[in-house]
Image 1 (cartoon, one colour):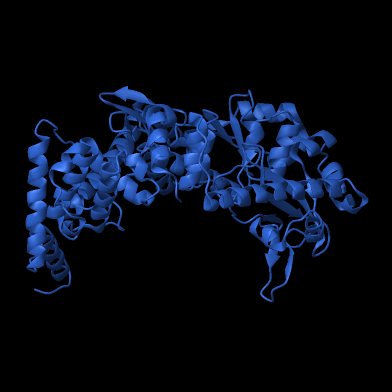
Image 2 (cartoon, rainbow, N blue to C red):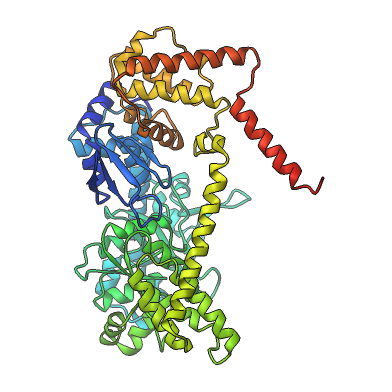
Length: 587
């Protein structure tokens, strides 16, 4: 996508990375950098670093990194041009349009407009005689008020193959557009028909108030019971939550996570306007990070059956590792929150929330339910299972408190339980140390890029090439002193490519900040460049360091021309062969 280089230069200059990142991540200064919990993976100890000097971010845990444009691309799941657009709006700049960019934007706007028209069509149909089955289900069986139906924009899809297709065609939308929006299906025989037929419809609305997809519940007992929009240009079920557009405005100080649309709507009607639901998929890490932007406490209110318990067990670590306080609500006397509220009322549900367990209590009680503590053998297994869980807790206070409770249940002393937890902790530590030792014994692996798609064939040369690029990014003018250095001399295709891009920008008088390359490189390539830039480099003798790097680079290039092999990689292959031979059973 052709965006003027001068525009990128000004945009990057106006977009201080710490300001942008801090709107998503809580940052604390430690030393020269700012640190926070990585928004891209689970962690309890901050390993996510932002350098204001280098204008980059880098996570030492998951390896993601780059500049300010890359960050917006990753955090908002946007392509390059759309991320630039977001930053341009933030900086008060108008993005120069070209044909391709404008076409993408218009296509996206067209699909959003189509979804809005479809939602209006479904809602009007629900309130018409043709929607009688839907009104009976929502107003009669589910006892929803007209106000809540209107607030959520609920509707009804026609009982036919082309009701929506025909209605949208009259408004100027093509079959291709309905296919792209996930509202129509193309059969193997080439017939195009409505995806949603004779279903109660739940519009999925994003944080900007746009209808991005739909869920539909069948009324005639056919399968599947619930049908959701497929992923499209404007909808991804792993990155959106039903009703978060409403729940994020709640003043209740928590978000309640349910399994389905009706549970969420029923809770909102009862006054719990902080309820949300995932969209026909298990809770993802992206969901958890999305929730953590709007609350510090998540209450899991899944169904009480075995599937709901399993789903809660999977969700707990995902939520907890984002820094959220996690509680689990036990729905007793009903199969789900909707049925509980219908049966017992709002006040009873409020008591359930007030008495909800934290995630540790919940998981320990789930362990307890699997064992008969009257049997000594099962009692031992119960204590070992509890110790395995407690050993993962970072707080010694939590380990002691919950360990004491489990000891009392099993009839052993708190000291005995503490010893078992300590033993399990040491076992985990030994296991982690062995894994680290195995990594340390293979230095060639340590020097390789984290991404398997980027491998170095000559480590000595590649390390020198990294040094050249690092100095180019830190002191761009230095490279003018070595005009004869060519990309062909680089052993790594990626590093040679980056050298060419930086040199071209430098010679054209443009900025050579890493962020300006976001449109030219893949995300894993940007992450690798950020890792290179994060490595220490003394600038006191930068001119000499550059010449030393180039000397190594040229020497290794000459060796490759003579067919010589990198000795470090050769030693690594020899180690692999020896290990394989030794493990085959031969003497």
